[in-house]
Length: 114
Length: 113
Image (tube, rainbow over all chains, first blue to last red; front, top):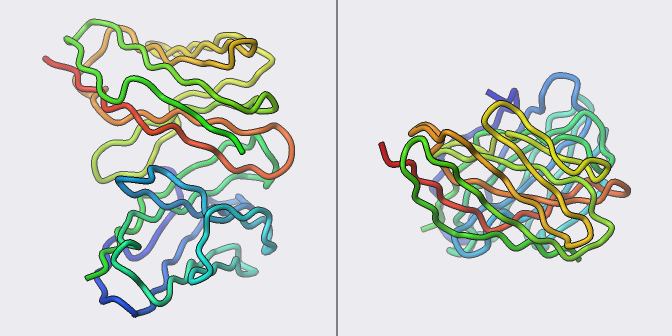
């Protein structure tokens, strides 16, 4: 158990809908990351937050947004969902936000869009 | 941006044999290289990492080697056990700036009892 908690574990929703994925980082970690894992794209970095502020942005679609709250938990909002958004979404955390910090992954939220 | 290539995509070994997974990277500024193990239905778990100031690191049956000149690094698992069966990912990131990991495409390791 990495200490990173994600909810929900599984989610099935229809195209066009909006969902929110929630993440609690390891105790004491200030930085949160979101990654998407799909069969054809592998593990793709979406976005990083550090102590409430956006730190880096990767291949995140404009239909997706995220935030990190004062208590350091994070939410990833996915809107106008398409079939191709079906994937495993991982939250991860690290003690600090700088490069080279060890990143610990949660168990993932499996999203199925039908 | 960084491009990490990983080989082989699948690997089957007999229990007790060694397994080697290789990765190459493109960005010469990368100098942090973690390896993750992902079991079915679970998130990636860090198993070992190496930074560019060392060429080799070992932790029990697992070792990682790094050749910065050639831009490649490898994972070595000795005395493999059935519980080593999983998908292994290599990754690379810079030591400065944002902390985004660039992952390889994964290697599915099967250890045959």
